[in-house]
Length: 431
Image (cartoon, rainbow, N blue to C red):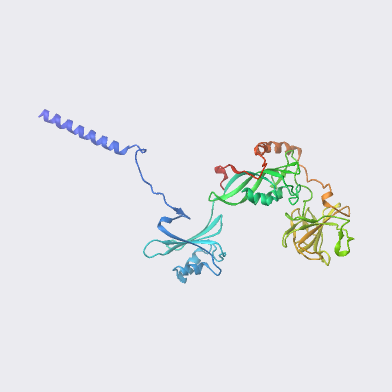
């Protein structure tokens, strides 16, 4: 009896031990050995595209949100209900011709329109769910800021250099703004060259939505190096300015030209002879900048408007008094944007290029007075902007030290080959 009992007892222990071992092996299996197959979903706009049929189209003339839904199986009473629900959430009343929209249909036997997505801009889209839980929302895509660098060699124009180099052509206008007081970009020399560090905005990782700002640059023009580093001398006003490597403000009291891009077609010339008048001397006391009709005309310095009028010779024109020493005048405008006694800032749009008055083509005639006498603005030693304070100069030089090293390490182009690379990218670059 005892032997039978012992055998049963031992058998029970073996069973229990085996069961515990089995449970242990099952419960505490090494997760690295477990092969779990997870099927990744094809998600876009929050929808599983594997479960839906997507049709992408462009807005045609006359298309409305309602007409698009009705064409795809949603009757007007239902359209009215949807519009009422999303009224204060999104605006789909004005669809822009040529912009894309997507329709999402179910894949079952009765294909039903489930959602509408409208993409009026690269960086955002509007989504309207049309079935089940109806809702509408505007989604702004995250923007990634990438710091990039580039260089270029001028063969013809700055714009052509950007186009052939693979750099973003918007850099043309940003560099023109930075160096507006120092370089006339319509008088560049073949062989001029530049290096630049800038930030560019991207959505969907690869789609550029424009330049954010220039951080540092050097433009080698006519054998002279023009450094530029961004700095905020007044944190309260939040105004960003550009200074050179010696902390000298690049900004001057006057812009080089009243238009951003416009070649000089006629210089200040007191001995100009005109064949139309029998080759007689007819002085030209202005500087003509050619530009297409409608190009913004900028005040070259801050001041007060003392004339905004029309005359037979000048056409529409504006005169600005900057101080007791300097005044400027802008002729042949298509339209004037300022009135007498209005204060204007440097770079403010005061009118548009036109062909009014005595002129044979669209341009702005820029006239410049110093101490009551008309002079050639290109031959004047014009005053600098307010210099940086001594206290801030040390902060500035410390702030640009790394950027200057980085800029100097970029090779200048010696032939028509260029670089265009991203320097850094971090999580902090995502807005």
